[in-house]
Length: 346
Image 1 (tube, rainbow, N blue to C red):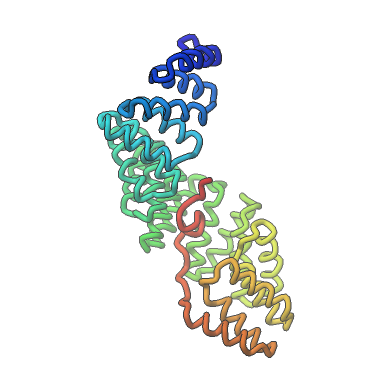
Image 2: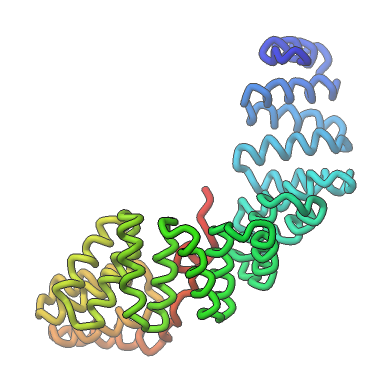
């Protein structure tokens, strides 16, 4: 083991474990040898065998947590790290990894206090502060996120990502103009930063300031030509300005890049309906409803279309759904760029 010859060690530990099956040290060390070779599932099985013989082994419980964490089994990792932290509270490793496990589960409200405790124990660790700040942000704890991003910026005022994420926190708190200021600062520091100009354009779009939104979305398409939402909102603005000829190819291109663009299907349905291309409009509105049935606008346009097509019962059904729903306010910046719960983790 000490020489790093882990496969040879594994074979020897297997012999020992076979001869002395109730010897916890044999299973523990076999687990370590397996883990060092990347055989994490087998390592976890050996740690569990050892813990079944003697559950009061905090280091083995911790190793089990590590094995599960590295496999992405975050719920199992939480259970192990909680036990390790209870049996050995002075070991801050379990606190950090508990936070990271909840973070992996996208349970940000649960992750934040553990990450905060770990960060307080190591305040110079900027990478940890970034994870804490993101956990606060995605958990919609905007005050916490702002505190952390400001600390990061105090250490490095040129941290472009910190400016961008601070803007997301500010917008989440309803301070959209302050968020715009942060993004303008970031754009000065790094004008080619991916998604930055989309974020800035989207905040202008939310304020219906199309004059400033359009050039920002165009800058995003220049810097980041595969970013679908930039084309989507350019198309949506063109539609609002009654320029269907400009809107249609932009909206179609956004769908080519990303298939789940509800607003793009809705807007294309509006264009088709205006041309009396009813089958195409019907398909587009139905697709928009499928992507998000909670939005009333597509139900309303479907109702009008069914009425126009003489399908009175279907029209009545869609009008009923429209009345039961309420128009949503514009998404916050964090919802727009990351979804409601932050980036998705497998």
